[in-house]
Length: 155
Length: 465
Image (cartoon, rainbow over all chains, first blue to last red; front, side, top):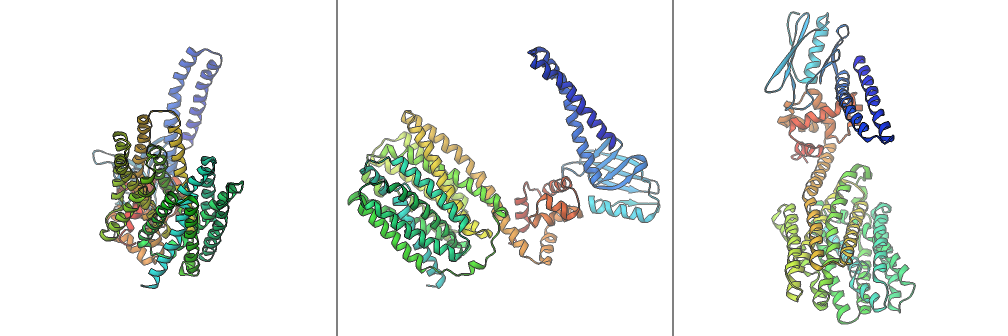
């Protein structure tokens, strides 16, 4: 999460840095150069907006955490999964959007299958859970928050 | 006749007689026009000042009157005060006229909004459309009679007649009860029903802009038919209300159907105004369509106000705000109409612009009506839900098949939604963030196939309310 926040602030500075010359050139009555600088600043601005959206999604995931694996920098939640700076979203757009379809937990790993009616994707992660009670609690949270019954095996 | 019916009729009589004075004299009445014209006074400034005073009177009454006892007091004092302010008009024009008109407009505005308490207390919610129709019909019939007196006898005789009506209104108001079960009804703050009230105001303003506009555009074209206008002007209006009342009461058909009929009549009236000449027969056609549609529109929004009285807000407040929205709409429409007619445009151009305005406002009406209905239904359902015990509330949720699609967490959020809580309140109650609540709400909407909270609440509670 902190890496995402750091990237966001870098992008913000980059956007400002790209826009300042455009403004200065406009003030200095150099419209042609100002236009070029303005066009060039669109790229960092777009990246900034896209990253802001990603950060919001990551914050939503953090807020609704079901399972966190700190040493792997992984957070699994009601509304998606964050692995480092990578974000997968589900359960945010009702019946039409991507949903969590299946969860399986064994002694070492957790398998998450998510997708819509057309295609799906699966992710396998180490869960870091060491006792049966924690696994039971996690499975219960999945059921309450996402409606998916986790398939627990090997415990 | 049961006691309830007699009290209802008494409240109808009291309001109609007061309203007849307002319509025939104070509020752009023919008697006022005749008196001002005869004395060579600036009609527009006098009329505008009364409109503004009446607007503030309605609003003030709405906010100051808080009980049935106060309502009766305001109704009586306001009407008696109006009677006194009418006296200077029996004498030659004097500087007293303007302040007298202003004070009367304000006082009658307060008295009229106070009557909202009687509409609420004397008529059960399902029958308010009948009471609204009755007061509109009776007050307009009285207004026609006063106008005829003004035309065929004299404007001062008509004023005397109007004041007699007002005195009769005072008499009926004196007989009204002032302690009723309505005193016990809970009154919510304005904030609780702010949205439906705002929608209602917008709805009324949009509807009545047309009447103000029509008054300024069509009336001058037929001003040479004074005799016919004096008695036929409001007749289609009264007839349309009577027909709508009969159909709504007897056949229980959808009220929205009338909205579409009125819209079609309004457009037809403008088209006829463009196509036909300016003879008496043409006036009959145009006025029948135009005033007929206005009658339907008026009963439509009056019945909306009647329904809104059931939401638990101070009745004088709802009534005052609703009627002041009407005054505002008439005034805005008047400004539009005066602007167009004074721009030295050709008749056809004025009518075409007016028709465009009418079409735009009419296009806004159906979605506005749908939204308003939905909000009012959801409020009614929400109230019903709040009154249920916990077991019944649980039954409401468990009986619905769509609940199976929701996760446990979404069901928790739904429960809070049905209680009418905001996202922030839900977040605080469930110890989650507001953005989480928003996402859950979006998911619930999608799974329940609805697009708003109002629709969601209505779909869940329509059988229980």
